[in-house]
Image (cartoon, rainbow, N blue to C red):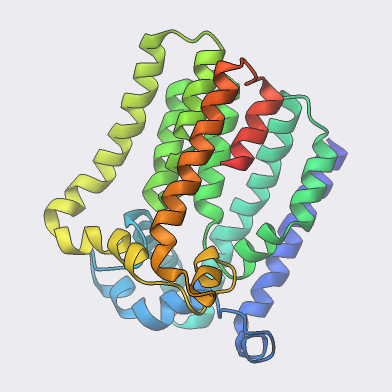
Length: 289
């Protein structure tokens, strides 16, 4: 328990310090070429829509708009919707989410009998934590995905599906974990009825959160998916798209992602057929996916 609390506090402290960097990202951008960060980008280019529009064309799926609306409400409660308050409001959301991610990783490691201290230690030192807490906005889908895995390992299958659905409403990539979770359930001799219930629950969450907005404004709802497919990344060195574009392969990035996902799913299926989806291998498969 003492190690668990220590790593949670360290993660929260590191994330807190990262928000000091966000107050003025320009020196980092000018010296190292860092992307100024999603929070800065959202406020600068979408601040008015976040504050005043119910739904609008945006770079990311609808779940992002829900989170940004919550951050805008918090920043208004702090006195005024400006960058400093918007940044602080996001800190109030991101820091606890990151700390809870640490706790979930610790609990997942214990459930599958991995060295929890080592796992958290590597998480704290990983580039991913730095990127998610200082530049990108991905801690929320990661939080819901980890919560989904934790619940699945505790045999709360339908609740696990709900939170994987929440994660996929924010960003699409958590949905790529769905085959891994299904193969894990099959490996655990889960009945087809329960697996079907798991899948129906997952897709129902997607429909409930997406369908109303697709009906309200089809163009705005499809925009983030088409934007990500057709707009090669040239400015963010934290993405693979940036490097594909740099070497002149940006036009093939959709094919690259489809190939990568297909290969990962084939490997997952091979693990399943070889009866190798044990609890530990399950975690490795998730990491690979």
